[in-house]
Image 1 (cartoon, rainbow, N blue to C red):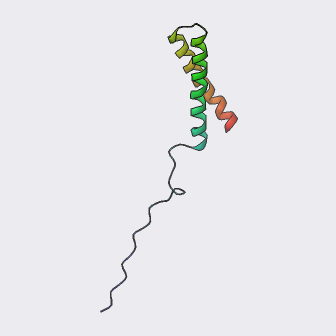
Image 2 (tube, helix red, strand yellow):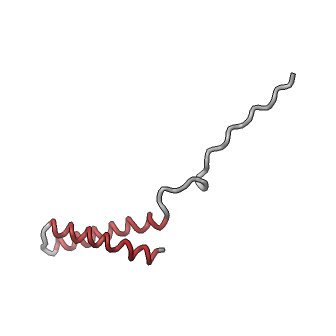
Image 3 (tube, rainbow, N blue to C red):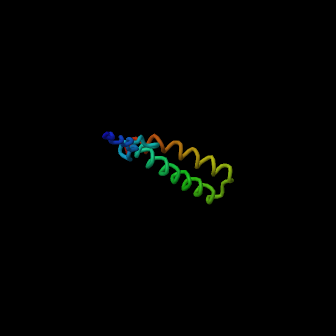
Length: 74
């Protein structure tokens, strides 16, 4: 009696076939926007403004830089 060869299980998807969590553009744009927000917020705070005003300036500049960075990097 001959035995049939055992089937091999399918190989797991490799990194080229797996869907990425973030696109490369997003992975560059978001950290750049965070850096811009930190720089603007820090400079605003050092200029003598309150901490709340510096945080607001940093958040607004980070949010405002995202569309510009997407256009430039895209």
